[in-house]
Length: 490
Image 1 (cartoon, rainbow, N blue to C red):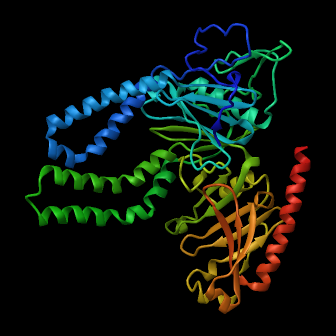
Image 2 (cartoon, rainbow, N blue to C red):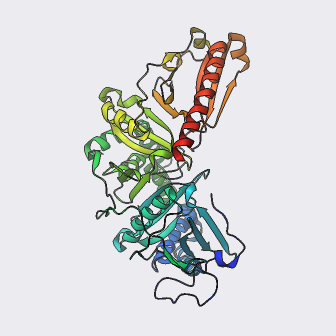
Image 3 (cartoon, helix red, strand yellow):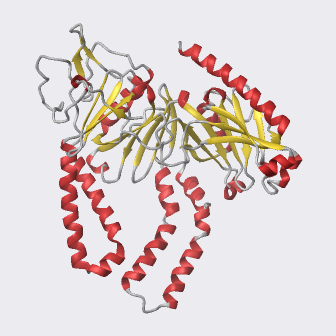
């Protein structure tokens, strides 16, 4: 998580001192030179702000002010937004040094953030539609305990973005790693240590990126036909006839509806109709591969995303079978980490490792994410008969299993979901009992894990004796796994 930078001046960075032809500071304490974002960044951000302004005014606003006044408001706001974006860009810079990512930003209120790279969970390179024609990309970092992207750097040249992503991931695993030869990448930061020796941080991963930044051999790809079919077989599609019928009904009921009122209704309906389309665009061209840095995914039609998820930082994995996919036996795989976000960032669903695939593909990817552990190795133990009084419909889907490496929880009848948590990733274990559970002699074992996808996972509606025994076993396995992981780290 980001935190305020140290008070000493040597740790602060000045974004006005960039690597673009700037001279190094004169004699004195070693002071890293900040790299500024690409000069087109304020323009792209200004264009994005203009669309936000248009959406804020909406059709009702144009109906109230008129097209000419509404357009004038948009133009003035866009010019002011562009000016503010340029000022913010001028005072924004970042530097990677001493095992930390330091970011300086803010024109009116200066803000210095320091992100220890050992807390880094994953790094994502995103190419929005507006940035792609200019060869620019955004770097998004996820850190432990953050509910959203902590340090979005928008925008950098695509090659530099991928180079920065490689360096951040490499240094997050080896924060003290230093190379003797300087790298040609402009994100490298040089300085002199206390002994006067010149040190340069360089990437530890040397494999070259391809033209799209995907430097791994794909082990799973999702064809456009299967992807489109999976999005069509989604709950949103069931509401399409209702949305279209409501639009037609309102128009028939009020044929004298104003243009702006009808346009607003059509826009709202289009929002529902386009949800499956946006989802298909987001996962278009999905590929997953394995590198030394972790699981690498690439996806997106209008906004290209390249995401790296270190396997050792995965806290939980789910494999789900949506109801409308059952006839085709398709499954969905997601993973969570302590940072909590991933592709389709700021989403509580975690990082998608397989948007749609066969059972064999889902099982293989889940094993990769869980460092080789198989979440289907042990059949789940079903819930006791008394659970039918509390979960009359969902009781057949409840189950729990303990493998050598994982706690596995099953739930859901409409959308069966299997959740696996490595023992070492369990943060706390609780046995909870509601009033009705107390009457029926049942209890729930709840596990807290890191990541926005699961604030907790649980073994629901077990007998009290079983719940206490399960909690005791989980505590013992958690301690043993944590001890073994600590020994390996040493």
